[in-house]
Length: 384
Image (cartoon, rainbow, N blue to C red; front, top):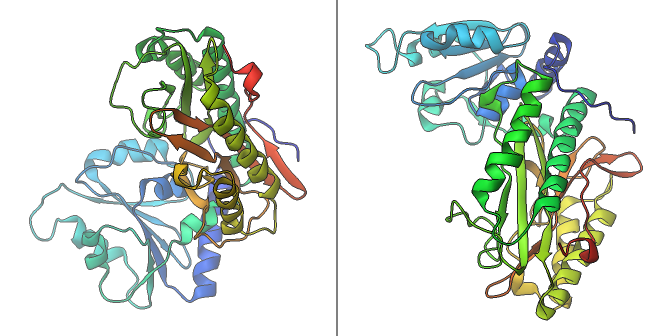
């Protein structure tokens, strides 16, 4: 598979193809329309990303014809500037508003008069109530987002290169005492600058740069970022958390590293994590079942004596967010298909000792996997 890096916005052809895929599914399922309000789905379908607050943004995709995007009048110029594709804008005056001028009033006018309506499983209850009693919960857009177009693969590959470069930069600078502030002021800023240099029209609402580290004291707790200025310490394990959305597409690369020396009791869990990593790479192949991959990893951890040290699945999907379906998880029985993009990240977490996790972003091909991120992964290269 040849993936060409892309950093510019989508074409009208790309966006029309996404709407067309939704409408083909609606026809096949006998649904009159689909209602979406999830910011990630709105972004995927329209190229619009914004801070979502009490004023709802709701997209209605009919079985045939133009999608209708209900937006607050306040945001009309902004929406018009960002949206790509043939979309009809419908506005409401404000929130709250008197009867006749509410978003619910305008919304009822753009729903099909007859037929069942597909809605997102996590659609806010206020919007579900406004749809009436003919709704069919269905995460249709999430399903379609799982298979990436060539354009999307190019955008993800671009973001992965930026994150890989930033990650290698961090490893080259790492030393005891280096703080999260140091990282934010240097490496985090450099990623944002590269995005802006490449595309001055980048959308800051579709960008979230995380260039974080956890030291040995908290690395056993994967999402512990309570110390906003955590510093690297001698030894380890340290874990990098480079999970970002770069102008609308996610990228993730993470490593376990040590400063000066590896504690003796850290060597066995590091190797067990690496075995699980190798197994996940081996089994994440087109035609396999996602749950089977995670179950095999869980068995490996159990056989190695680390059953209780596992805290999460072996990986997750990547796309317009950096954390989405499908999931390499016991419970996701989807078939792995070419064009799916995942993080590969089985981990071990031992309170008092630390956490052990590498992560890379990969795309499934017809005959294997292509890794889109790069950084040293062998223990001898991660003693800094």
